Image (cartoon, rainbow, N blue to C red; front, top):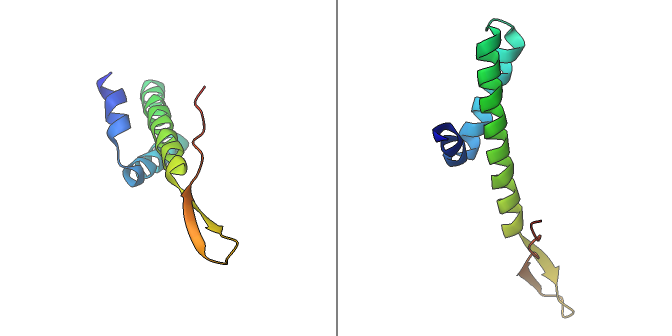
Length: 83
């Protein structure tokens, strides 16, 4: 559980960098099976956390709208209902 919380707290950029390290380690073939499974699981946790962060950011994006008089305004995008 501690690692799962750690993955959720990770900064987006740091998460991407860690995922790149994990991929390099797995592709190198230089780690044993147990370690490979451990880092693979870490990568999955980080990936899920980053996906959640992206979804949250997308919900906060504002779209630019041109009014009938030609002025531009912003409005909040409709939130996607979670199932």
